[in-house]
Length: 430
Image 1 (cartoon, rainbow, N blue to C red):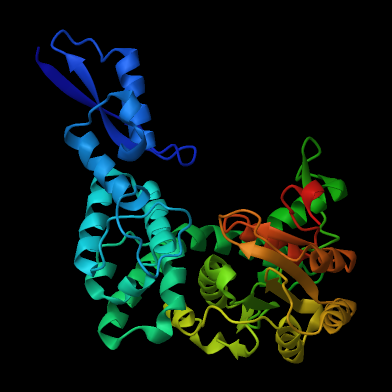
Image 2 (image 1 turned 180 degrees about the vertical axis):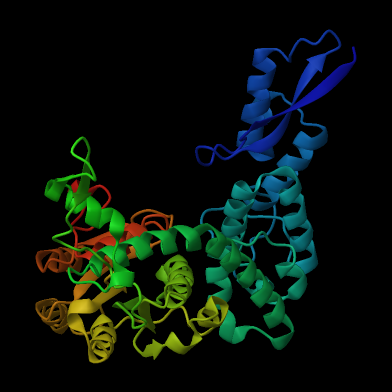
């Protein structure tokens, strides 16, 4: 009996909803699909792997066998566990110890799986098998699928990276940064420009700064009917008793933004997104933007905001955390409290003086500073964080919550306009 193959999409690993991989469905010469039981056994065989699937009686061939080999190299058994592996249990992998063999494996998984699954498998390979050191080799970096998590890993290796690898690493980081900028820059500019215009509303604008649409709508109640040129006609006019304008001609910054970013290892994705947003905000002339990163030391990267890649390579992921020291530095740079928004991005595991940190936040808010606390700025959801500190900040009127990059412009707009923040799942916040 002859067979033909049709390609559909499914996920043999069943890792997360929506992730897909290529599979083939056998059809007989008459066009009928593989019997349901056989297809079910095939799926179980792909899920269980070679070591645990003897009872299925299913033999994989062609692309299915190649996919199974790529999965078994990472998640299967039968090989010696590498000495630097950080995985758990008795399972190990067969990727080998050299960058060329890992690069070939990376090429294979990019052939068989979509980008979202490739990124998951790359992270698992780095975490389970301790392959971070191999990322220091250019041929390895050329084979990877760039994503935010990979950038975080590269930044953590920055100080150990040889010169021969740094340019390749910068190219990988730049690709991720440019992708993020394309996605985030336009909505951020549009949202914040509107917020800045509304926050700068004035009641006695100069003629060139009058918003005539809003002015006319606000004065419709002052409509007057006047006699026309002859007794049979009349004309109407709106008397603009109240003028509305936004002072758009001003060249000075309307708001000061301070991004204070925790660069401990757990905050890698947040550091990447904060750097991109910092560059976007710094490019808006109506904002004065400062970017401060910290662990137990504080580094001001404001002068590098024209290039977020330089910003990222100026960070050093890992180490301790002294939020109080970082906030003290930020507080010392505030000159217009009523027009300043401070955004603290941290998991709030404070290694410094807790009470002083809280007093500092309270003091800034008392002077009119808008203070925003983000537990994370990433797509990963709510991270591990210090619930006690989050609750204490919430009691001061600075609720702490995780924020996705897509929500960040709305959060900033609300802070600029001094509106309640759009907190996701507010009832579940600390």
